[in-house]
Picture 1 (cartoon, one colour):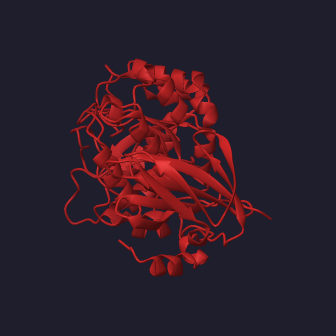
Picture 2 (cartoon, rainbow, N blue to C red; picture 1 turned 30 degrees about the horizontal axis):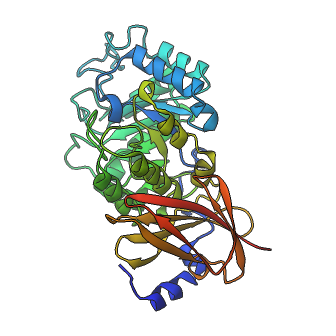
Picture 3 (cartoon, rainbow, N blue to C red; picture 1 turned 135 degrees about the horizontal axis):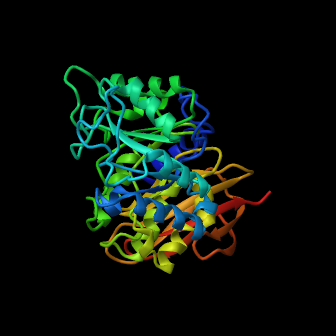
Length: 398
């Protein structure tokens, strides 16, 4: 933790270091995920307790609540899909007929009919984490099956890792298998940060988990887990950019265990990080407060900014009172999150010198209240509640 103002300002003045203009040079060139993926996935809210009807209802709600129109395009079906040994005589995957009585292709067609993209889950090992069928030594065949079903995204987990292989080797097998199908399918690497995916993930996949699961399936979310995953994800911003993204795991917005204030701060932190935005709650239980978070287009625009820069911490004058910043496309624009991790409300100041805007007057807009706050010279200070965040867009005057 850097506490010296002199050191902070000296580093902050190097705009090319704090706010690089592009992502990793070695990003996977499959034309996908030019901005962080957005969508919904079942694991956090449902675990294995879902079926075809559940997935259809989530697709309906993504479309009817305005989430699809706001950018939540991917519907990812996670875990408990193909029971162990459920392959036909040719070795092709056969989904659980009780969960998917009409077959996977029909379900994917339904998802597509809602204007959404469909995602599927598998594992680098012979079995998934829940003991269902994995893809080890079936990568080519399973990739062809996913393509035939019409999938647009494939997530590969890291349980039951075969002996003698590294994560880069195993994930490269599925990467190449997906490419060989000729169907564009985004590739989601889920090794939980075990083998430093920020080093090899950019040339292998379109997003990669940087840390552990953020919550147990169907269990309560925890503010401490949100901060833990955010902090881990923040360690390697240089790896993230158009085509490939650091992923701190799915959103806990709408899950029990966290307050609305914490959920809003959580969403702010994922947006400043250019993180994938994958909702996990049961959308049938979405409250107006949850919906206001998911559909805040000004915050979403920060996450989806075409420069694809992951925000970095630029100041922490007092432990737990942090300033995070991210350069945006367009002239002289920067997004800022003022984060209060402490147990009391506190004043937090963002200084223009820390975010590469010099000392000229700059306009400040609050992205949660949707209000222009005025023009300020040199700095702006806000009262930030405990476990809360203020999110701003700061635009230097011409």
